Amino acid sequence: MSKQFFLIIILYCLLLAGCTGRSVSNIAASSSSEKDYSVLPDTKQPVVYPIDSKQSVVYPVDVKQPKLSERELMLISQRIYFNETSARRKNLIIWNENEKFVSLGIGHFIWYPEGVNKRFDETFPRLLDYLQKNQVRIPFWLQSARERGAPWKTKPAFLASQYDPELRELRRILQSTKELQTLFFLNRIHQSIPEILSKVSASQREKVKNNYNALANTKGGWYPLIDYINFKGTGLKVTEHYQNQGWGMLHVLQEMPRVEVGTVALNEFSQAALRVLQRRINNSPKENNEDRWLAGWTKRVNSYKDPLVN
Image (cartoon, rainbow, N blue to C red; front, side, top):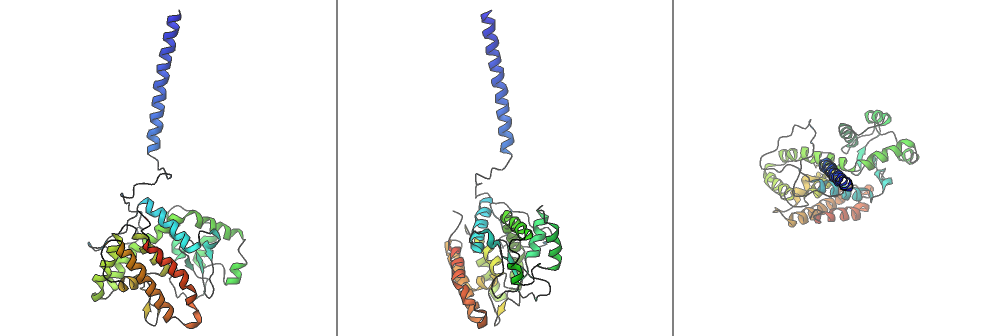
């Protein structure tokens, strides 16, 4: 009797171990199909993030198309968030002195009130469209305002609204979509580079293309490209010039000497950006008092020398 009892116990244990083994393997299999965001993926495996399907952009075969790894996306998002907001949530929506628009998100996307002359490229409405396409719920009041313009007509009106529920809700949306906002920048790079190359003079085209490719093929090179085009634009908008000299991406690539792939490309882009921004300040109307921004701009473009992704 006792032998039979022990036999039953042994068989039961074996059966239990087998079931448990199957359960564990099933759990492991299901877990492996899910992304573990606590473990950063291998940066040697770049992925092409979704590009806006409406962007029918043709790339020359000798021009590098934008690609980011998930690690690059995360690091660039964090760095741009720090650049634009000092990593403070309240700075996700601001209205700067002497400006006629509100700046929102990690890119300080421009949003004009209705009826204001739009000298600079208005990017926030396009960001809202991009977020919606990527399944972000946009509240009705914000969708309505997207059609009319920023709901704050003046800076005093904006400051008086700091604790309104709508503004708090908008900050929450912007805080939770930092990586999508960075992908929006990536889409802008994707769309802008062929346009820049098509509009630059023939005598400068090879140099501009070479310098862009050098950065795009340098480890950490996407950060300065993405950040600067968000920071100061493409350089193609006529109204973004002082005394017929611009300060956008095109002008920085032109200002650089011809460079090769590597850290020298990061250093030269950083130095050229600073020269272009200093030239903007020198050319600007004195009443703008733009030299008050030089210290912050210098700190920002100096960060381009850091490869960011090792």
